[in-house]
Length: 186
Image (cartoon, rainbow, N blue to C red):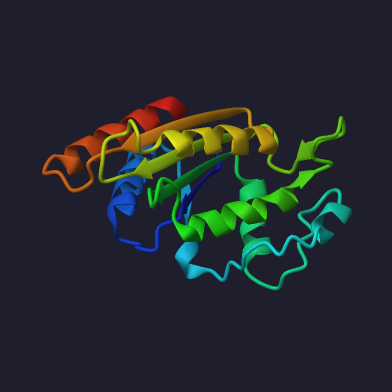
């Protein structure tokens, strides 16, 4: 199984990375390796809305000259994708949002009977860390992820949240969530 983890935080060693590290360790213990992409390390331009990508049917087709085409190749090769981001303003980080916007070029013939995605039938996990409680904090993001996974034609979507990222027991709860994530794979 090929698992791709994508860290959308501007901090490579922040709270979200901390939880993602636990997850990667847990699956490694079970003989599964993950490849990590730190979005902050790549040049990811915002979607221009030019719609050039819709002309290409079996490839992303984005005309921008940045690192996203190489990242999309990794996504397409993966069996499972884990998107991890801190919660900023009831949403993902701006780095992850920019990357998510570019996913439109992976979807072909959207809203037609011929609709398909280059990520169809993949399993997707999302991991969110936040300073507050889950209720009234990550609920909007949950709706986005449901629609995002639907547009991409994913086989499954499982969402995980670690709240209260600055509380003294964060490490313990982070490890518990990482273990739950790993258990969902096996």
